[in-house]
Image (cartoon, rainbow, N blue to C red; front, top):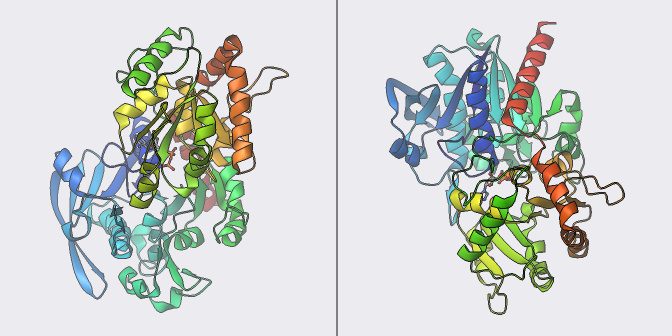
Length: 479
Ligand code: ADP
């Protein structure tokens, strides 16, 4: 089977969020499983700097926006990079601190066309083109329009994985020319969305199959509450919509082998975790009373992640005797609002506005709980990592959080974390208090930690599930 994974980010090359982990790990794992998988990415500045790429010498000339844009194909093992300095030779992937790049419609239209052109240029006929999010969502539409008579793709199916419906690639109608698509597709049955051009909608309408990153989220996005206006068309396609939970790479994320943490530990021997906590508190200048818990938040400072509940509840959390660590990055506005929090009188609060993976390892290992009061969470990797490190999640009962965390039940002493339903401060704090109560019973708490540490959210499982989905789609096409 030949699979082309098209993504706007993938580890180890470039990353802003969970999509990078999923795309990079899937690419690697499919090849381990003897599937001929290629990965295709735009060539951002950092990649040319950090990796030794092979120049294939193959040029691309793509007509968009009333002119030709020249590109060049580079490779690194089986990964393919679309070089076009004019569009990708920048530091940010999608934008900078001031916001999104103004030419993103053009940048990702070009990328979508390049995905198709590269297949022909290197003579790689994929059985499946696995697309990810809005940045690659025009591929199925190009295949149905401009390339519809092209025999090269006669046997190719497209799968679009939606990692986050909150990001749809919405552009003004003037940007239609950047896509190279005709006005005939710009209507409510096509890619128009309340007067705008919607890239993700193209993928939802025209990809052969759809998936998203948890079963619960697959259900949620067909409802108005979580559908961001696309619930109607998603509902229509629900027979082709599947939920496959992401996974994490336990070679990187396991306290038994993690070289980035102060002391290694395991579910059988938790002593090292106490050392990690001590070291982390020292690093963050947090002084807690003996037996007091350390709570952390790791993630993007976006409305989605519900950071505002943590900020609103900060004084209460500190008042309960907890230490609080916030590690995150966001828009300048979000970062400034966090910076404006006075640290005075809040001794046990530490904020780091940085994307710092090394520090993230220490935070997962040294904290007692992670807080994830997300408004919505398609899958979430943070809670999976936290569970592995015996760091108990307190999270909203939504999307992937519902699928991966089992709410603690005091009656029969089961569960792996604490879930709450309503998005409001009082309910969030109530679940924190439930967690704190159990935390004071250290034997029960340790059992809770161990149950979480023993869960398996490995990439091995999710890669096999994607392969099953590819096979199912190919078999159904044959019918
Ligand atoms: P999303 O993809 O919505 O941003 P996920 O929970 O799926 O959220 O994945 C986030 C990933 O990025 C996790 O691996 C998390 O550890 C990492 N991460 C997020 N923010 C930071 C940060 N400021 N520093 C280091 N790692 C971070």
